[in-house]
Length: 500
Image (cartoon, rainbow, N blue to C red):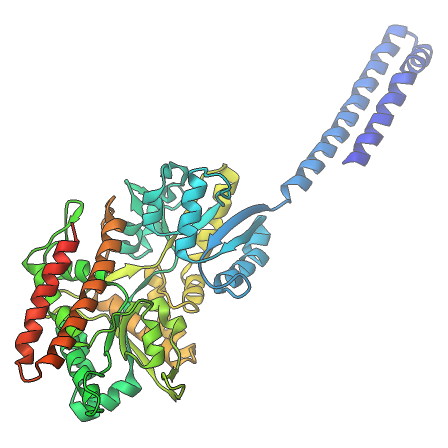
């Protein structure tokens, strides 16, 4: 374009310098000088038109070159590590295909965990000193958006997705991202709570005790089995009383109570607080019995940890935790054993609806300009297409977000080589077919209530377990059942005193 401009300028200047001579000559060649002047003026206009056209061509060429520069989008996410991430691999594919075609380049500037990204987003949105600027897109739970001082800086996805496009998503997944009537969190990859069972150790226990894996389908059955397992392992070493092992570990006490109450037709919340009624006591009873008697693992940490060491053999945890389970158990004495871990739908209460917590973050897009926002939508529509979404989520232990994605999962399962992944996605299909996904309410007090309940349930059950074991050792002939029931009641009262 610069070359065209220079040549155009030279032609025009030549014309300007020689116009008078050309005009006089033209006048001598014509009988009427006036006619010659008119002819020359017409020639001058023609040259001007050519020069103008060449100049505009140069500008258009320049504009064309600028439009070929890709729109760059910055993203923060939580899926894997910076150098080993399934989402990064999907982004590379997009950048080399549709992104290249459309002039869009997605760049990942941060890969971390949800807590760290939550803090980074809040700091950036509040303009805290030293905080990074918000990226174009970031992974987020609704709780992050609710904690922002001004979430109006986020786009409403309904401005870019038609009703027909949104109808392709699982309805409850879209519902979770609606905040104050605005779709601010688009579902990208969803997890749920799954029952993981070390079948190798469970089958060994079942062969001697008569326990059945079907018993774990209800919370009541699971907790009764946990009590029996502790007694069974304790009896393996009769010379060391009270050294039984835990059977079960739960990552989310808060979800156990809130989903349980809803599935039984009640309410866990009353306004911005927890409802402590007879239904809550009904849910507390089996859990506390199993925990105080020793059948529930109460130490801090994630549920995957005691399953890796054999300190527990059953867990309820996020489906995404499949990434951290292994086929090897390493016992405290450093001996190892190869095991088989299988996944099942989450237990329910007897007589209750089949309901389970939906988990997994979505993605938010920060308002900017039409070009960047539209580029972000092009990327997100590509990533949530059923085939692309299934290819992504099956690498990270999540569920697809569109109904068609579940239709594609049987074929994806056949291609899986790892047994626990096959089992997990089989459990997903059963969960999607038979369960209702529960959406947590958007309460200002939600995070505070969750943190306090999780902390206090664990602490009070630990204290109850310790006191009960001491009482049993001091009075071995006393009725253990009566003792246990007494500690279940006293522990509940102590827990209630610790909560608002």
